[in-house]
Amino acid sequence: MEDINFEELKTNGIKINYYYVCKRKLWLFDRKISMELSDRMILGQIVHQESYKRDKPKEVLIDNLISIDIVDNLNIREVKLSDKMALADKMQILYYLYYLKKLGINKKGIINYPRLRKREFLELTEKDEKEIEKTLIEINKILKSEKPPPVINSPICKKCSYFEFCYA
Image 1: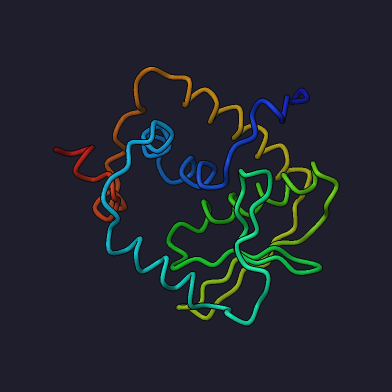
Image 2 (image 1 turned 135 degrees about the vertical axis):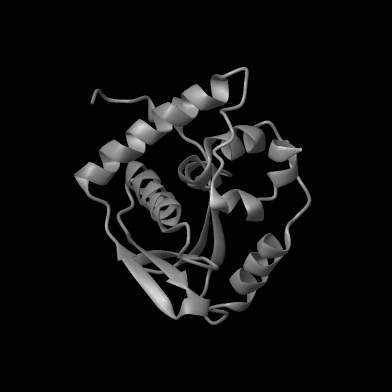
């Protein structure tokens, strides 16, 4: 893969996450089409706020673009409600590691699933970097499109805040 223009393609972490969950959701989110908060989203926010209170700092915002839940000397950590979207969660934190590497900061990543009492440890590899770059290019194409990607008709759609928008 050729070198990409990271400055042109960089995005926020939620868009990386949405790319792996649903490309239509990514497109709608980018257009600032927001739906009511679902109970699941509210629960996720509560778990996020209440978990790991002793770990500081929380919610580190970098370049007004990426928001990392917890940062320490060696790791960045994200707190997630469930592991049902494990690939999306993994790619989001790998993107954060990639982004930080572009800034000259090398860290490892941890995804915390407090309700499951589970953690996943991640290190950015060259293969991951290539996948992130491919993802950034694909996200850029999706967001430039005039029309949203098609509905995916997946079981996850029933719990999505955009469900009514897609299926009404």
